[in-house]
Length: 71
Image (cartoon, one colour):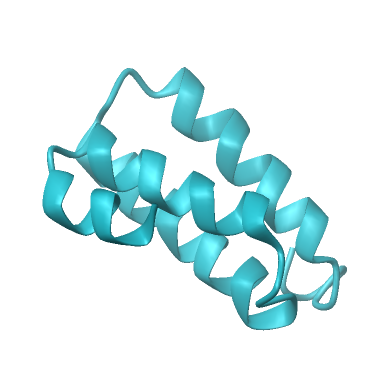
């Protein structure tokens, strides 16, 4: 995605959501999906959907304090 669509924040966001929901809370996968979200936020930092997805994924890996701070 970084090579073909490096400026497509929505693609990073949607792919991150897809794999986060499908992975069954596997931490290794969620670490990678959070990196995709960080890329989306870097491209479009004002999008509240991106921020709320980061918070949700933080809660999925039992990092509730970080997730609640983002909310």
